[in-house]
Length: 488
Image (cartoon, rainbow, N blue to C red; front, side):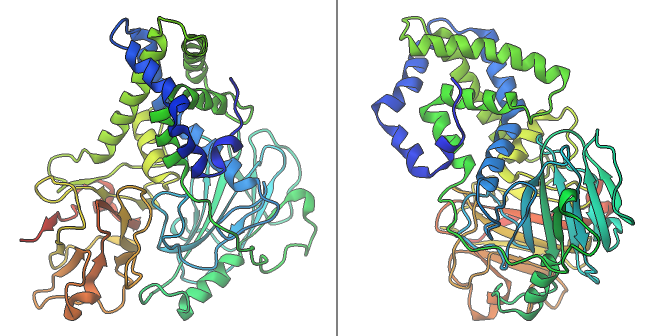
């Protein structure tokens, strides 16, 4: 039962169409059979496989979505071994990426360094924050190239593990593992006013971003790399996220979703270790039996039922990991990303809620879904986040807090077009005692407080704090963000 990703990535309407009788049959038949004879081995395999393989399902889908275009686009997207460059900050119309970065101008694409080296020309960015993030098919992040790690301007050659040959003179080799990698270029800017794109410094950051030029070695000759990448073409944004499509399929076509996950893991571009292969073989055995039960309308659908329950329970485990704050963390949840090892639940949670989060040494991403008493954050309430004097996040670069809608994990539209707030927000007002209070609510807290206002949507929402260049107090967990307190 091999399906093409283009069949599920075209538009949300295709998923919504699954809500009919035929689409519900898969889930309904499986759930109905569940109490009769639960296959515990099939169930456990589905839980383990969903958690372990979900990141690859997402990266495979993102690569198809972003590379099946004829030319670089600003959304961003680009053919393989090219990059699409944005010319503006992210706004709420970006729906296909959850928890998008609203702090930097960025470009992105996918590269295949196993076929040939990919060259990246790095400009002189001055004192600006910049980074080149390289993420493998399992969302592991390669050691950083960027201002944080002291990287210099010049030519970098990204090569696969088995490539041998001569690189251009002066090129710095960056050797990666197997598979296709996502490449993300990020450039910071110094300030913003309601994040309008006419800000002069923001436009300088856009020009700096376009100074990062990506080209395969086969197209290189001395002097052939231009000083600036061409502007990418504007195009409509995809209408929904792969995460939303996945959630819809989990409810309406769970076995189809599991089959698509299997297909992504079996793709030739997926690097597998021995444990992956062992789990994949067991997963495929039970999945084939479940699909046979369903497609032949067998009376006994115990395997299909067990795998459906396993999928749903795995999704609950992922949600709980993201929302479960440790004692003393004031409701905030932090998962150190990018170097996963055997932390498969953490890897799945970040893939689902903030895919391609960077290594902790470069950036950290605490998030919060609840107020000081554990109730979900909701736009019907008013909240404050108060930093006492001397307790702002200790970072080497900058920090921000971004508002996201609870249903889509995308930016929330608001009347002042402010989607994040942080140390670069001009006009922040500190109290006489040196403290800083951020007002988090749907409506204006009053003209005198709007400089410190982070608008919320009408319904549930969540916040993500980004630490760029986290200092040791953050890295070792000694620094604590304050709670989000609900007003009276």
